[in-house]
Image: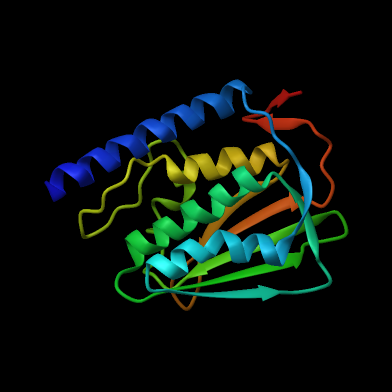
Length: 193
């Protein structure tokens, strides 16, 4: 029974991911960009993971950045997908540091660093591609859609997401987005108005 439930949950997640990708790529999603208190937004986004899993999450806030213009429903999906990946790939003791900062006068940045093994160098250039998954020694369930969804949502926010391996170990995801939003959405170089 437990195995059937897990399989059913995985299939439901896969269907939900495909539905979301279809909506995002077709422009059939109404985004609501609001000036969002960044500290409250991140605390609410990570609370579920801190309560349900034994994940140590440290939040750092640099500069004087109090609000960011995001659609909280969709932007929180980036944080959730990155946390899900950290839980899957890191192992037993998951530690994540999320740092919010002012990139420059026009953009904010969020660094999401975990204490895992990092991403194999061969996988880094394609990790945000649809169906791409990092190679691992262990069998880890996933569809290869989570980081692709993160990329689309970052682009709709007129931003970007990238990743590199920290010299001390672990993966560091870097999200950059503007401090003001024009209301235009760019996905794979197409402007959606």
